Image (cartoon, rainbow, N blue to C red; front, side, top):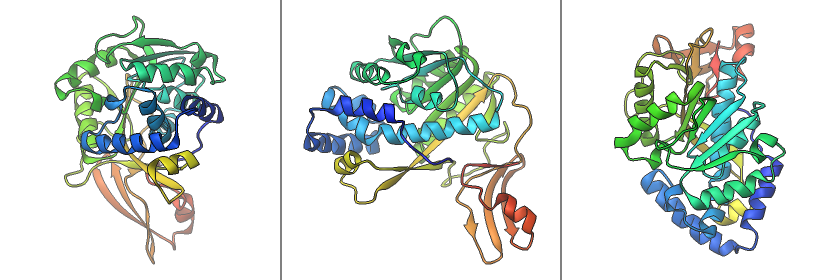
Length: 324
C-alpha cells in the first residue's frame, strides 16, 4: 500500500465543516461514535447533527479515505487499462470514496447516493472545495442503497464502509441492484475485523453467483482458503492531524486502519498474479518469509537472502501487494 496523504482541498473542506464547533464537543462525540463503531461495526447510523458530522470528519473520514484509496490502488494495479468515466458512490457518506477515486482516475461523471441528511450536507460542502468538475457537479441522490439507482450503469460502483449499515436480510437484494448498476467494476470496502471480513465473504459468494469475477484481492475465484480464527484483511498507515489526536486523545501521531475489501468485474481480468501477500513479511536470519494466497490456496514462502536477484526483486514488497 502506498504512503498516505489527505488531499489539501479535502482537508480545507473538513476545516470548513468543523469551524465554529469546539474541540471538546468534537472529542466527546468522537468517543460516543467510536463506542458505537466498536459495538456495531458502523458509526454513520448514529450521525444526526453537525457535531456528529464534525466528529466523523475528524476521527473517521481520514481512515476510511486511506483504506478506500488503498483498495482502489490495488484495482488499478490489477487492471491498469481500466479508466472509469462514470462512478456511483453508494452509501457515500460525505463522498469519501469519490475523493479517493479521483486520486487514481479521471472520472468525468459522479453520482453520490445516501439517505443520511447530515452526511449529504457534508458531502455538498466538501465537494465545493474539489478541483474536479466531476465532483463539484456530482449528482446527489437521497436514497437507501438498494432502493434507487440511476438508469444507466456506471463504470465504477463503490460501496465503502456501508454494507454494515444494512440488515443482513437486505444484503442480497442490495448487491444484486448494485451489480446491475455496474458496467465494469464493483468495489466493496469494510472494516478489517472478523465481522467485516464475514460481510466481504458473503458479498463475494453472492456476486460470484451473479457471474462476477474477482479482480482483487483474491488471485482466484475459488473458495477462500482461510479458516477461523484467521481472516483476510490489510492495513493502511495514516498520520493523525492535531484535530484527530485531540478528538481521539491519541499520543501516537499515526494510526493503522485495518480493512477488508473486494473488487469484482464483469470480465475476467487479463493475467493472474501468482499470489497476494496476506501479512507483513517477516524478516528471518535466512531471508524473508511471506504468507501468501495463490490459486492453489495458502502458501508459506521463505525467500533466502542468498538468492540475491529474487531477494532484491521482492524485498520491498509489502502486506497487501501481489507477487507476479
